[in-house]
Length: 68
Image 1 (cartoon, rainbow, N blue to C red):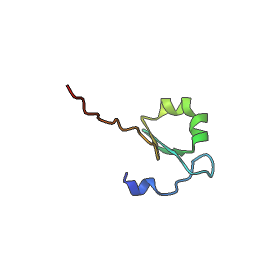
Image 2 (image 1 turned 45 degrees about the vertical axis):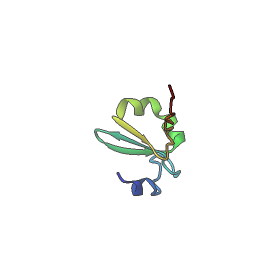
Image 3 (image 1 turned 90 degrees about the vertical axis):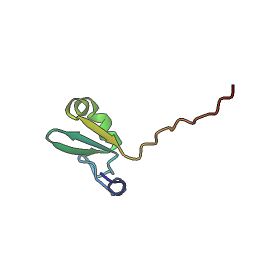
Image 4 (image 1 turned 135 degrees about the vertical axis):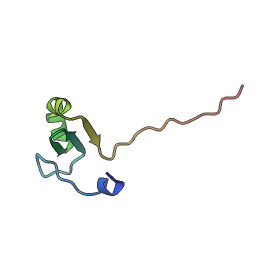
């Protein structure tokens, strides 16, 4: 998966909204919007071996200079 893939419009497999999550299972991949990810979270957590959240903002720890 490239950054270009993440910028494409990919439809949720349950509705017409833009997907925000990709769930990968041994039998294939499913795309979900936030609403349907929440709705099916218990089942997806059991089925999927990986769930990728698109546009996730991760905090990057800031290094500080400590003086002795």
